[in-house]
Structure formats: structure tokens, C-alpha cells
Image (tube, helix red, strand yellow):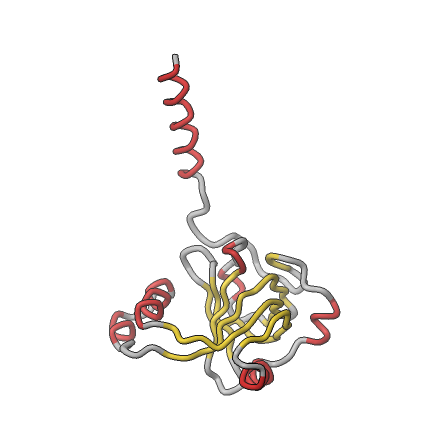
Length: 165
């Protein structure tokens, strides 16, 4: 009898994993949609540009907590929607992960303007990590192979994301 109970429990566990999310969530990312925690209206009105965030990071010893940033989404992880990139004023990009891997965003977020609320820092990203994200983004192999140096960049951990237009 014990064996049947264990077998049943193992089967239920396996079926749970079989139905786990295999891709980004569905959705059209419409104005007003939020992902993760609620983005407050005061955060939305106080949101700074990526350029101002960069200046603040340089001034505040490479880390800024509880900040709201506005920007345009340029890419979303096609595998799960677990990261995205935001375009900066100088047409470079910065990387955004979701806090504690607690929420994901739809790929329809690409091209949308958003307000992110969370923490930012300047961080050195290893070659392996850069290649991993390039593979997730389905970049061409030549582009992945061209990644040979670690790079310092803005990394943002979002508590919440709101589509603004």
C-alpha cells in the first residue's frame, strides 16, 4: 500500500512539472497592464530616464534602490519572458530581470514604453552570462561567438512593470 501511495505522489509531482509554464505568458501588453508588483502612480510620475539613472548610479556608488525608470522595451526572453532589455537615450540597452524570478512578461511587451520599479546597479557581466542571454534571445551564432570580454553595464531588478504607451 505504501508503494502505491508513493507511486501516486510521484505521478502527481511529474504531471505538475509537465504542465508548468513552457514559454512567456500570453497577453497583448496593453497600456495600463502591470506585471509583478503594482507600480504606484507616484512612481510613474517620478520615473526617471535611463540616462538619469546612469548618472545617479555613478554618483551613488554603483547602486540605487527603490527607483522608477521609464523606457522602451527592445527585447524579451523568448523562452519564459524572464528578462527584458530597455533602450537607452544613446541607443544602447540595459538588462532587466524580475525580482526573485517571481513573474514573467509576454513577448508582446517588445516595442512598448514601460515604467519599471525596483533596484539598479552597475555590474560586470561575465562572458558566459552574456552568451547565455544571447542564446535565449536567439541571436545568430556569429554574434554569440563575438562575445569575448566581460562588460560593465546597468542591471535592473524589477519589482513591477507597467505598460504606459
